[in-house]
Image (cartoon, rainbow, N blue to C red; front, top):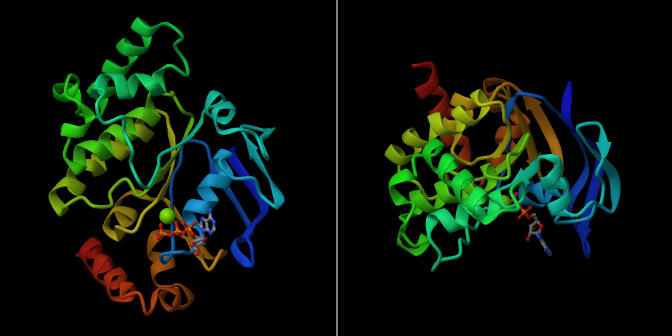
Length: 251
Ligand SMILES: Nc1ncnc2c1ncn2[C@@H]1O[C@H](COP(=O)(O)OP(=O)(O)OP(=O)(O)O)[C@@H](O)[C@H]1O
Ligand SMILES: [Mg+2]
């Protein structure tokens, strides 16, 4: 069964076709990835899926419901939540209060939302930081907080926009089981990711976007061996990275 079905969606900004005629299906319970060079339209596609942007053409179905053009908070109520590539927590508020913002979607009462926030913090290894202002977190901590705020909405589908960006190799290693744990906990995950090692390790299926269009899909090793994909990345210095991460995985 597909949790999300995107049918032929397009979105232009003036003359720029940021997303063009993209269709994809996300099976329930899967961990899949969306990759592509900078400016390919990945974040725009997430914004269209989650309702932050309206498609010019096409339709989006979530859990069998046509959600095309529906507002983000209504989609979140249905169980579709995204994270943001640029994380912006409420800096002066505590980690607990920040996570509670997400939990308020499901819990009207303040004490219940705060309690739910603590449970989510435990799952994401943020328990020791609950009383700290968000401003005091490291980059890795802020990434976890962004994940926690999204998870606190109790999503069925989480769209993760580069949750590993800015992390060092050790922090990435620590984050991989966290992402995997979300899926083990019953959440379907679609992630935008430039860290190929993570894509190779986590994703069952990968979609490749270039200049607004889907140019390839398949298993991680299938897409990284696809000449069109390598071509799309050339000039961005990524072709070599793709090959290297494959060698690491296959070693
Ligand atoms: N609100 C907007 N108004 C005008 N142009 C936009 C807007 N949002 C995105 N774009 C443009 O659309 C294209 C796709 O941008 P998008 O942010 O979706 O790419 P991306 O694949 O997420 O890139 P990155 O890997 O760098 O995050 C880019 O050329 C970008 O400049
Ligand atoms: Mg982006």
